[in-house]
Every structure is written in C-alpha cells, then in structure tokens.
Image (cartoon, rainbow, N blue to C red; front, side):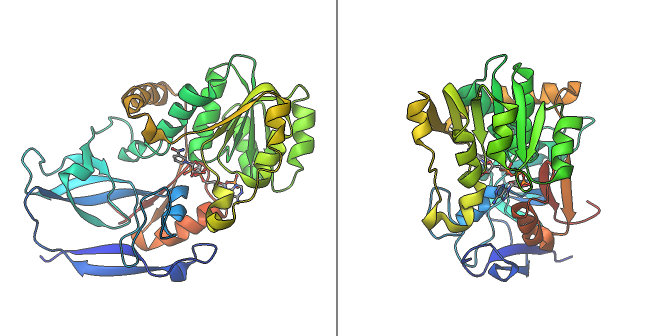
Amino acid sequence: MARENTRVIFKKRPEQSATPDCFDVVKEPLAPLEPDQVRVEVEYVSVDAGVRTMLRGEGFHRQVPLGGTIHAGGIGRVIESTADGWEQGQAVRGGLGAQTIATVPTSQLEKVDDLPGLSLSAHLGVLGGSTGVTAWIGMRHVACPKPGDTFVVSAAAGAVGSIAGQIAKKEGARVIGIAGGDRKTAYLVDQLGFDAAIDYKNEDVNARLKSLAPDGVNVFFDNVGGAVLDAVLDNLAMHAKVVICGAISQYDDMDNVTGPSMYLRLAERQSSMEGFAYFHFPESIGPATVELEQWLREGSITMPEEILEGIEKYVEALQFMFDGGNLGKLLVKPRSGL
Ligand SMILES: NC(=O)c1ccc[n+]([C@@H]2O[C@H](COP(=O)([O-])OP(=O)(O)OC[C@H]3O[C@@H](n4cnc5c(N)ncnc54)[C@H](OP(=O)(O)O)[C@@H]3O)[C@@H](O)[C@H]2O)c1
C-alpha cells in the first residue's frame, strides 16, 4: 500500500506572532529510501519555544527555509531501513521534523531504549535535550544555587522552568516561580512544592518580590526576558547570579529586543549574568539523562505532558505555547491511535 507523509511546512515569514497563515500542511507520497536512510513513524513531536527563532531567515538557531518542514525534535520507531544495524521497531530520537513519517539519514538520529513503565514521550520531556537536560545543565553548570538561597525561575510551570525549579528545591534553595495565571501558580505551590509563586499576568512582580524576598534574589533562572527580567534584576541580592536560558517574550520581534533596562543592578550588587545553551555542554548530556531518569522513576521529579493529537495541530500548539496555555511539556502526537 502506498503510504503518505503529512508535514507542516513554512509558508510565510511572520511579522510578529507565528500565525496559522505562516504555515501549510501538505501530504505527499513516500519516495523510495536511499542507501543508509531510515524511515521513522513519528510518535511524538516536541513543541519548543525556540522554533519561533528559526523562522526569521537568520539567527543563532538553524533556520527553516520557506517551503521546508518545520524543524522539531521527535521520537518514533523505524518502519523501514537501508542502514545496517537500524532494525524495524527500533525507537529513535532526533530532528524528525513536524511530520508523520520522517525519512532521514542515520547521522540525524540516536537510538534510544524503550522505558519500561514510562511513555516513550519522556525522551522528549523530562529526558529531552531541550527540556529536562537543558534545565539540569543550566542548574549544574551555571545557576548552581546553594542551600538557603532564594532562587527565582520564570516560565516556571513550563517544560524547562518546572524542572529547573524542582532541581533548585533538591539543592535546598527557597524557590519562587513566576508564571501566568492561577492554574499555574497553584500547580507550582501545591503540586511541585515551590515556596511561592507570582502570577505575572495579574500581579506586580517587582512588588511581590520585594515582599517575598526582602533580602534579595540570589539566583534567577530566566526563560522569559523583557519586563520580568527587569523586575527580578531590581531585586537582586549582593553577589547574585542571573542565568539567561531563554527569552520567549522577545522571540516574536528579535530585531527589537527590549531591555534589560535594570542591568546596572549587576554593578550595584556585584552580580553577574550568564547565558548558556545545553548543546554547549555535550559531555553533560549523558550524566544529566541518567540522573533525570533516576529522579523520574523514584518520583522525586515530575512533569505533566500536554498532548495535541494530529500533526495539523502543530501550528495551534505553537500558538498555545506562546499564549501560555501549556503546563509542563507540550507535544503533538502526529497520528492518533499510535
Ligand atoms: N538555553 C537552552 O539551551 C534552551 C533549550 C531549550 C529551551 N530554552 C528556552 O527555555 C525557555 C522555555 O522553553 P520551553 O520549551 O520549556 O517552553 P515552556 O516553558 O514549556 O513554554 C513557554 C512558556 O513561556 C511563557 N510565555 C510565553 N510567552 C510569554 C511572554 N510573552 N512573557 C512571559 N512568558 C511567556 C508561557 O507560560 P506563562 O503562562 O507562564 O506565560 C509558556 O507556557 C524558552 O525561552 C526557550 O527558548 C533554552
């Protein structure tokens, strides 16, 4: 039976938000495999904030060409192979793209183990490079909170932020999460055991920090940038550390990034700001994965997954994330019932 691939392609460069008219969903027949290729039935596609920065035509991240498949990490199983050692049924992870069936060289993939008792999706969630592993690397290599520190994290109920905050709790810090809306702040305090949470959409972040952290913030793990970053900068303790993991509030207009306007607090408080990307620490990806899996299995770390079904939902999922809809890891399951 002739099979088809359905993929999400990049149609039009966004002016601000990546609206649905910037994408198309196309179906096409599968071409015969070339040597050393595998065909993968994609089971989960990772929805990542950084994708917005790949739609500009230039930038730090590898850009998606117009007409090209949207770049996305994914997990799936080999259904056909011309590559030695890549058998049908093998679970694989890699840059599979926003599509139902990926035809890729093996150099673009890594084999992963099935996870007894856990969904394969955990390889993109707690164990994912751009998710749990990013949080682990940012915490261990850059943030490094000490017991008793006041640790603040933004986009705290999202994929990277929620794991960073949970690691900070493990390190003995007092953790304050910043997130949008009651559902998220309640989740952070009631389910994750954060010490406090600030709803940046309905509260004055600066005033709340002054009351929650009168002695100042020792470590800030920032995923958001803009006004939230400024509010935390204004509340730093002496010798504080600001970690730039990302700045989602700025991704829709990277030619006009806002702020930070409070950066002189770094001089006044003898503090520092340091950014990182997880792939700058390749030697830590293995150890991070091992420890994260151990924590996941013992139940000392957790992360919900929100899953939209149908590859055509990828565009909606991206908007959902930029509207702050997701709690934990956001995924798309390209075909329901798989
Ligand atoms: N450095 C690295 O290696 C690396 C790797 C992966 C990801 N990242 C970065 O990590 C951050 C989180 O990524 P993720 O994939 O885990 O996403 P996520 O946190 O699961 O989802 C993004 C969240 O950001 C918040 N947000 C969206 N627009 C916002 C705005 N304008 N202002 C403030 N908050 C906004 C929303 O939560 P609210 O409801 O709280 O608004 C949304 O749920 C991103 O900045 C991403 O680029 C960095």
